[in-house]
Image (cartoon, rainbow, N blue to C red; front, side, top):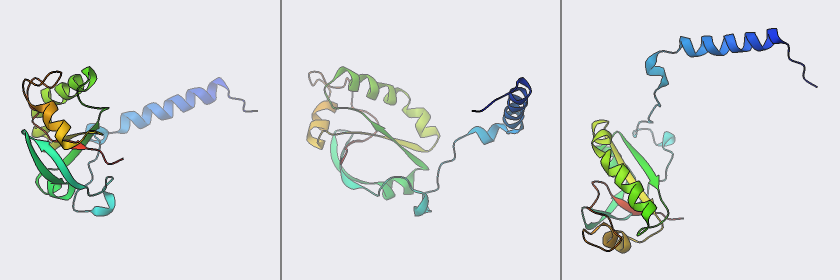
Length: 141
């Protein structure tokens, strides 16, 4: 049985507060692993089809990282759902913020690139209102 006194709790809180106060503002940022160090990459170097600006293209993670500082992978259920439209619209609304950080958002679902293309085509029933500024890729589960 662990017995904790008020003094122990107070000291623990003081230590945590001191640790937080000692951090510099820049220390609170999440470090992005440099693409030049493959041992620090957290995703496999995928190479497959994706939809970008209504075109089906090949996309490889290492090629993307040669042009961007980072890639943010967004996973969503499937196309032609209200949740997918809402999620992808939010990502698209913040695209300029990603771009300013040298980061490419990449949305992934289990749908094929042909389904992604239909979903991203303007005027498609239950599709996106406009094609997103970022690629839609099939997740290889």
